[in-house]
Amino acid sequence: MNIAESVKRKTEDYSHYLKTEPFNAQLQAGKLTAESYANFLFSIEYLIKHTPIHLRLAIETSIEHPELAEYFRHKFDEEQGHDQWAIDDRAKLEPLINPPERVIGQESMRFYPQVSLEMWDYVREIERMIRADPRIYISYIYYTEYLTVLVADKMKAGLSRCGFGDEPVEVLTKHAELDVHHTSEGIEAIEQFLPETTDMRAAVEKQIDAFIKLHIAMFKACLV
Image (tube, rainbow, N blue to C red; front, side):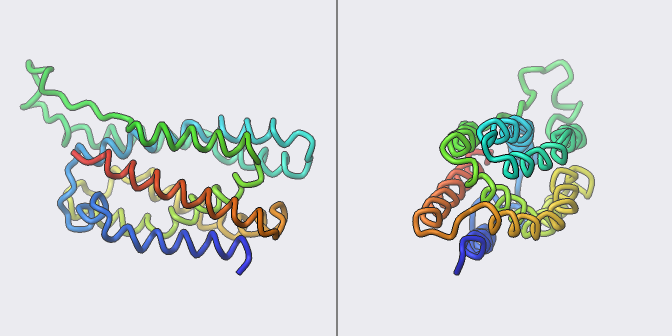
C-alpha cells in the first residue's frame, strides 16, 4: 500500500467511524439541535477562512521548489470566497436558533455560536505541519476533500431529518461538488510530490491520525 492508498484508507475508515460519533449520530437520528449545527458552521467558517492563509504559507515555504509552489498557487486560486457558503448557511439557520418570539426584548436569551477551541487547535496544527514540511500538506488536502465527498450527502440527509430543511447546507454540498473532481488530482499530487519512503509514510500517517483526533474533538465541542 503506497502513501496515497494509506491516506484513502484512513479517510474511508474515519467516515465509517462517524456513524457512531455523537454529533453525527444525533444528526443522522434527526436529533441534532440547531445550536449545535450553528457551532459546527461557525467552526467550519473559521477553518475555511484560513485555507487561503495556509496555502499562501505553503507557497512561501515551497519557494525553492517551483513545481510544488505552483501546485499550491493553483489551489490558492480555487479556494477563494468559500467561507461565504458557511456564512450564508448560518444566516438561513438564524430563525431556528434565535426565533423572534424568544429574543425580541430579551437579548440575554440570544444564542451566539462559538468557534471551538478544538478547531483553533486544528488550524494551528495545519500551520505547524506546513512549516515542518509543506509536502505533507498535500496529503491533508486530499484527506479533507475526500472526506467531504464521502460525508456530504449523508450529512445533508441528516440535517433534513433534524428539520433544518435543504437550505443551510451549501458549505457541504458546494464543497462536495468541487471536491469530487479534486480527489483524483489529490492522489496524483501525492504520487508526484511525496517520496515513497518509510519515513514519509510514517510522517503522513501520524499527521492524518492527529487531524482525525482533533476533528472528533471539534465535533464533540460543537454539541449543545
